Length: 339
Ligand code: BTN
Image (cartoon, rainbow, N blue to C red; front, side):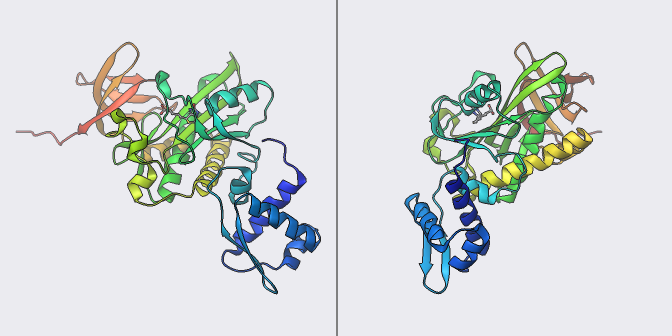
């Protein structure tokens, strides 16, 4: 839902104040002063929040305390936790969609603004890279697509995928997962895929109209949610940490980091993103097998170039530049014996 009612904004503000207070009580008087509402109006909004699944304790002479937040990703849950100017401030939340990338693409074609985000509790035809499907069971994970309108030439748009990958790996680490980036945009924990990014572009030769950055993160799904053939290679944060992840906190943290990295990238260029990507990557220094649509290439992943392409040194000693493809990371290279 893109258009917020006044009541919704007031409810978000109440939730914001109550979450800031943590376990402390906030008096009705304080809330009514901060919101410029009567105490009866505050009480009505608290009642409305309760019907939406929030547990808010009220004790006479002490005030209100937020006890439990429903596990949902509407703006009511996410906005009070956001630290962004633009990203996610307009949130289109859906219970079920085919693909958030497709919904976001249509919204952008109809004029949606930079920073609008489409998020869904479930996708029925979630899209992965190279025509693959993205498993998207309801209410467990994070599936979203951000609409970006950066002033960039189209050939630089792929760099945005690396911007998102850096934010994603950092946020996963913040949530206790030992995440690393596998080129170009898979995020893994202990060699198993936990998140992926699908970037789609609308442009003319000189100018980007918009970019859709679609991100899927396996947060709370369990092994049985993956199809048999993925069980050995996929994971979720909860499987890796043995603890449930608070999805709204994760989403708000991720969008906040994404905006910070995006600001830095648009102000200063790709260098800082590239340097951080290299620190977070598990691909560099590994023997890799790269499959593109037409060929296969084997060698040592030595670097990414200033545009984000992977540089692979082959057995013949030649350095090949790979713009797109699937990377299989072979066993780490052992120091070579010389005798
Ligand atoms: C990949 O690693 O193959 C990319 C996966 C991208 C999945 C996300 S989920 C949200 C957004 N909507 C989609 O249909 N795909 C992306």
